[in-house]
Length: 350
Image (cartoon, rainbow, N blue to C red):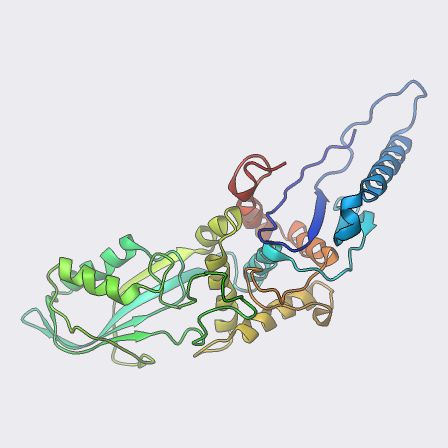
């Protein structure tokens, strides 16, 4: 008997059907038969029966009008067990999130943080800040009320009850494009702002509201600018870890979280105004590092929402093979994947 440990991930709005089964262990026991077959014979017969069953499945009429990328790979033996169209270019849909996540864990590090910072420039006298406030966005998709409350409380902690100056938002973390490359007008996705609140482009109104509730007097308008690099005092810093982002991103196939991680890649080498193309270049670098040719695929965004993404079952398996051979990355990725019939987007599937 061959013991299989399988994980799957949701294809979301997929326009294709791609099945990938990973075998995470080798033979643990072999059934004794009347003919006293050896373990090797039993395994060979099992593999042949599996191939026959899959060949029969693919003869179903539904596959006459479908594209199929199917690859079954034994990670223990490091070998392909079954291959049907594994190099066929297909739209990955939310499987793209796995590629984005593994690229992020590999290039940014498993201990990477998503950060939003609040600064002041000037002097505080008699509870009045004679100077300016700067908010630097780092595209943290988890920034919420608790974080905003900490921002506002930091004014009190620094003896500030009134701001006699300007409020500036530094949103230079990424380019000004509000949606992803190849997103359709009716996708109704959230604006890709590097300064989100509750996953939406509502940071400044919520910031003003929080200051009002705490009786902090402030300007009624703000401006966007690139923050100066000197004479600044850090008032508050709010961070969320890689694990805090990738677990809901993968478990619930969250597009906004995936794009937040995707842009971290571009911003790691290009600031200000990292672009989607720069983020895609980082993914392509990762693809090359695992022995595949990035020119054979197309990376348009981090979530898989774009119709311009194209990948193959072979590439996805190669990515997961990289994870299997990278214990630290495996430790962070595995708990984030939805489990068929148990949780996330696969709770009621399979």
